[in-house]
Image (cartoon, rainbow, N blue to C red; front, side, top):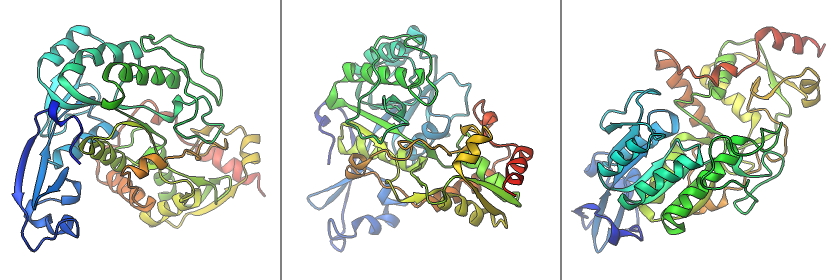
Length: 394
C-alpha cells in the first residue's frame, strides 16, 4: 500500500518491469532477491499492473547512533532510503551513509536550522523525553515532515508493571508542554517520572501531527545486538563463564522480549504502508519462557553451566533487586503480559528468541569493547552474592 498522504510528499519511485515468469503476489519477494541485489523482503515496495515499484523515502531520525535508533538507520539504508540523522554527536558514531546534522534538540535555534535544512517523508523521534522540548520540535518539523514516528514505552501505562495491558489501558496524565520536573517522584514498582513524561511526549506529537500522521510505538523489553542497557549481555557473559548459575524464579515464567531489528522493521514497514496509530511492541504472550532464554544463552556460548532455579520468595528474602541484579527477573504479573496483537496484525514479525540471543553473542564476541553505559554498570549480581544465595539452598 502506498502511504495515504502520498499527495503531500515526493516519493522517488524506481519502477522495474516484473518478468512474466514472476507471478505477482506469489513468490515474487524471493525471486526478486538476485535482481535487486538485496533481500526483497526488506524493501518498501508494492506491486502494481505488472510492475514492482520501490519507494525510496527521505527519513529524518532524531538520534540514530545507539541501539534501536542505530538499527532503524541501518535498516533504512539497506532499503536504499535517504537518511538524515540529527544529534549532538556525543553518544555514538554516525552510521556510514547518513547525512549527519549536528545540533541539540533542547536548543530552539538548532531545531529551527534543522527544519530549514530539508524536507522528509517522515521523522522518527528516538530520543524525546521532555514533552516541552518534543512539542517545540514537532511544531517546527510538522510542516516539513509528512508523518512522525514517536518511540515511547510501555511505562506510559498507569498499570505497568502490576497489570496486564493493552493499548486501551489508561495512560499516565501529563500535558504536552510539561517540563522535566513535572509530576510526583517515582513510585517503587509503580508509575515513574520517565513514563509520565513519555506520555506527555506522545500527546505533544499527536496534537501537532494529528492522528492520521502519527505512529506511536510502545516497546516493552527490547534485546539484540548493540543493547547498551546490558541485560542480555550480562546473562550471556555469566553463562559463558560456566559453573552453577542462579536462575531466577520459575523456569516456565512467560517472557516476551522483542528483537531490536524487528522493532526497526515494524517502524519502517508502517511508514511504507501508511499505518497510523498506537502499538505495543512485544513478542507474543506465552511464546517464550525464562528457561528458553537461559538455555539459548547456554547453546550459543557452548557453555557447560548448570542452571539452579531459585524460588522468587527466597530471592526476595535475600533482598535481590528485581530487574537489575538479576536482569529481566520481575515478579509483577503485568510485566510479561503486554498485548501486542494490534502490532502483529499490522505486520510486526518476531524472529525466534534463539536468533536474538545468537546475534547478541556474535556482537559481543566481535566488538572490541562492548558499549559502556551508566545503566549497564547497575546490572547484574556479583559472583560472591550469587554463591551466598546458592549456598543457602543446601
